[in-house]
Length: 478
Image 1 (tube, rainbow, N blue to C red):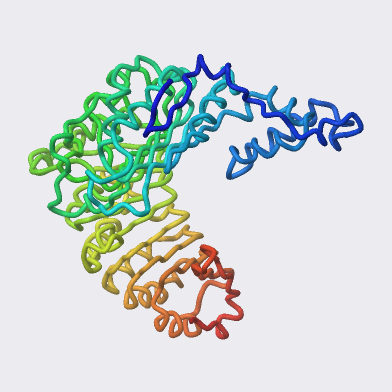
Image 2: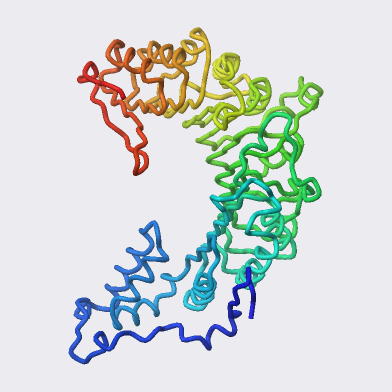
């Protein structure tokens, strides 16, 4: 028996002794009971079950519901390994969760597994030592899952503190192969380590881990998201990725500039790159290497989407000056420091000017083609009118623009520049100054095909209100 946070759970070899299939009520087992799906061929019912389960936002509950309708449906569902491939664990851990995990492992047979673990505690007091989920519980869970590592298809781990993540990374060191693993998403959900001057804590667990035998066993990995999580960058094994996210790291645990270049060179086929906060530790290396275009430029010829968030404008310019992105179509720029309330909005006029300069010609590196962008998102941005006019004067192909928490003066400047974007079809506004919106929306001349969406958060979540430009004079805000 395995004990996790005081809860005993049978090992996989013991689970067969459990009564996994609970007895159904006698009323459902009566001879005169007929399932409404019984006239349908089993193959058709199986296809319906599979589609319903895999299209659901909650495949676990969907699979349970299907298997508890009647004996006939239960027999079909238990014969379908694909219905039981999603494993979900969350706080507070209960015996039913752990028993369900064991049962799902048996029922899924040899099918690939999607594992989602969310150990965040909304009542946590921000003291690392006081969190209810620690390294011992994480160690027991991972050791239970490691025998199935050959079946891992995706794994997602969300925690508040570092100790469980460090335990997870350490447990992967001895794994020689995860041949089916395509997606890894690991997040320490504490964005404030990205603050300028902040260092990684706890310091005694800061040393990087070379997961999966230095990455040798990650041959089919395609999607990686590391939020506040660092590994041994020189031995990460990250290669051949299609999507890479590096978010909210403390600056001192990021890769050096040579390591960052080697990492992206090994992933030249990237389609999407996210850097929120810090990229490489450049120090004085950039100045020392200036003058050699071959050394300085990171060429990502297939990259279509870049999501970029900065803490320091000068650093952001230095980082973007490393890239040549000839096929870029989607760009997002965000003042991360303001977004997590570290400081007031920074003036990013110089960053906008840099983007305009690097879009001038493909023969001059670095190169970020503003004229080919289809979608642009600006979050928590402040810039002067001249820089905004210059930037939007180069957005010839943009069809979608999203403005989120842009300050009032910059919002007015952007709206006055939209006449240059004659292909613009969608403008989405979120958390925009109400007085500025009330002043601008009825007054400015917008492209005729433009649809404006107000992204309004209500009690039930986000709601987008569509505004017809022909009726824009009647728009009111509240």
